[in-house]
Image (cartoon, rainbow, N blue to C red):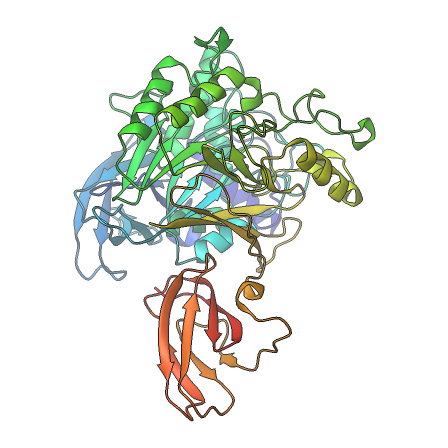
Length: 593
């Protein structure tokens, strides 16, 4: 088996670099040789109302030559009719990757796509979706960051790929990692990976990542909206730095500005009247300009652009894709024996805590311009955090930590896919509650914190509210299970997290000491289920809620009707609450679309 792995890897990397003597791959790493020469799968990204970027890699092209590849886009998975097609040339200038902005397409529409060559070889079929326009009733995005392939298994990517209830994946940086953390050597090849320094080194690292079938699957099934962060980049030398940025543009489905501008990654997306997503860049222009005599993270040009995009958006919700934690994370007063990271003032001074002047400028901008409904989506910190964003977390005249009043926006940071957090840092799990409690005590605007688990977030967006869900997956072994951890809600116009926590929201609707006597089957289900109640002599009202306690549907059961069949094909996959009289029960709907 190792000899087969070795042969496939050498074949795969033939066009990318001169292979070392031998590479032994860790578990669950292999190319998609069934769909050769498209052995690293397909991807889509950066959806607009009329276009979406499509991506693939083609192996086996001789250096100095090119090859014509055809892309096909269809409304149907069997490609019975073709909505869009194009012939594309691929060669070594992009390390044999293809990235094509397909369109015009219909807005708010699922499409299937594939690539093929003139010899009749086809790639795996991908699925993507364009952005909607006009009035939009609902959106769901997956939120993630920090996917170290060496630190654990990509079970979370597999669960993302299986979902049929999300419109896009937002990856907030550290998509690839430049080095192996010596405390997180879970899936490491032999020979031991060295930090990439050149353009070809980074191309090779991106190609290596796509030997993971779970990452390929997530990229195949959903459009990705991505930014880089520090681990996606090389060091200080100009040619190394440029190479890391160029390879990111080559190997991910981001829309590259024309003419090519390798250092530009910030951009924005509109999803009808419901949401505007502004993707920002903390890294590339950090320190080039100053604000209020302090170094700027965004730089003058980007900062002005961000403010313009947010203030000019007519969408109900303004989402800010942001690599680093924006809210304050103070460590002042925590005991030394907890061994917390940072500088005894902040846990992470390399985040926005190192740019206090610019952070205050942005918060003041939101307040003075009366801009509501801003949610900052953050990565990098490897922890779970729901934060109210305020100019003064400690000033009771400005911010009320009991209610959230006085916040200007909210921040959602849903842990890491695999990269180590507090336990990998060396803090024992037994000290976790003390660390969380101490952190919360000195950070009153932290509504919820969890420092030890890994996974991703889902934001469920409706005109009246956003529900931010946390889903955790194991990383130390290949696993098919995931765990819903909790959810919090921010409502339209409030600018702070509601203090109601939804771990299992049955207690919100269920009367005290009431025993559930109804039964649903099957559960989970695919959108069609039956409800069994005890014999009832009067008409009974059935109501279905989502996790924000928004009523999704209601039904009326006739007297003496104790079994009823419900068809919920229009419901997105997810967790719902069914209430029949005083009884409540959870429903899990999967694979609806």
